[in-house]
Length: 307
Image (tube, rainbow, N blue to C red; front, side):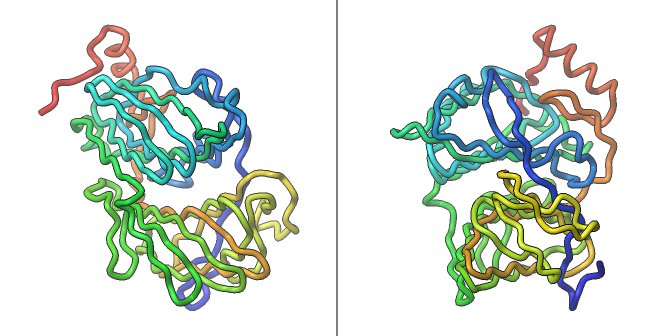
């Protein structure tokens, strides 16, 4: 379907799927290895929400990363973290940790939940271009208070984590893939329009509620999602979040609501169009680079001097 008056249309929609990661964390994966390279430069999006500590308390013990950035956004609960560089602390409700693994970091992330045992958040992986795969690791730790909140006259509220909305710039900056990361809520019977950069990959992930994400007027929600947009089938009940991937053509996206409000993540970035060699927590460009990374990890040479 062609874009209408510059409005991007939907390329593909799919549902998040239950999976188990780390030492036994139950979560829903919105996309990952099997969707490559559709979402280039993004690699993975996990949705972890539970009211049962048994689903998440085993956490993600010490493990390596190289060649990527991991973006953790917590909506409720606490995540304790530590790493091979001596950093330690926690990511609280509303906070973001944008970690650039670069040449290599070993860390752990241990979800703790809130006082009622509830845990809710997301982790997004973004690829690094070949020339930056071995850059020095770094963090951008952003607290809830540092994330600007915009309320529009059209009934939308936008938390600007990264990127720009009108004259408001998000606190996460100087990222290789020129990304935007917005947390958007739209009231019932309202709409939200956002200008997107030409040729950037753009996707929305529905957190809660229901909305129409393009002119075709098919509703998608956290509980209902169309299996294949091109089949034009009615949405099916699946109980997981809808991941909406947009076509490249078009200058903006428009999301409209009817009887229900909606909340969704809106993410975009510049495609790298580079080969990917990926195994577990390490993403490089060639199988030889991947082999070297794991060999260095086994030999204790994984962590490089910072400089």
